[in-house]
Length: 317
Image (cartoon, rainbow, N blue to C red; front, side):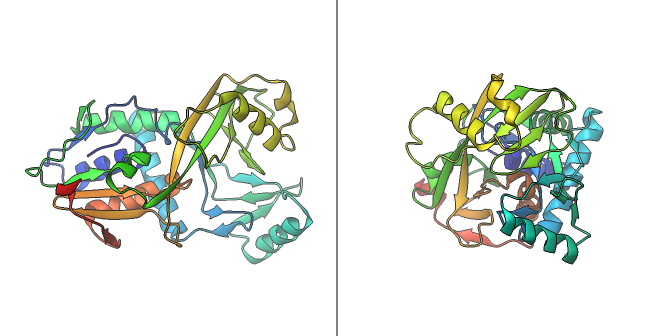
């Protein structure tokens, strides 16, 4: 098993859960939170886009992720998420009318706040750093062995799973598209944001009530160059000025960057890939890694309810 992001840790968890006597070894040469998952805002929602359309397989994906979040919270004796809902202020009159119709048609999913903002009732704020740390700690307790090195494609191993983010390009060049996202963490008054909020950008909560995560950039060019933090900060302030005007006078404590991997398939769902031999991959989670990582990891481990794309032979990679 390679990769310690959301998908990689989830695959290792389900391998040990369903095959407890099997030897599971997790490889990753990078620090735990140096990945797109480590830079993730923590927003977990069953909707996407300006139309607030319900994502494919949203109900089952939300349920599976929540079960994994609960398992990590129980083990770590620390809540790694907050099931509080997510607010979406309408950007313009057209979107406001759309949101009003959503509330009328689907009151089980949506509410309308006193401030005339859409409340996505199922929305969850995951504390990504705590979740990654807690899930990794749980894996070690379950008997997963960790080796801080790159995985070796050993033909004698029963199965090798790759969840390596943008490094999938090494194995499958040209199959995916990438964007880099940057977000910053700032200190604010604990009473300013009680719920996460999504507008042109977003403000997500942290387990520290004085910290919020502000995002995000969507960089598609020059991804081979190091991130430009100053430009990112400027863009993030501009993107969030309507919902967080106080941000202009704040300095970020940290700025994190991560590269999202998107499937070119029109469904935009993650892809479970059979690379040939004993090698499988889970990739293409895009900006919905929190929504889909648990469901797809579980189904890939059990080889059920999931379409495996056959793409090559691992012996040639």
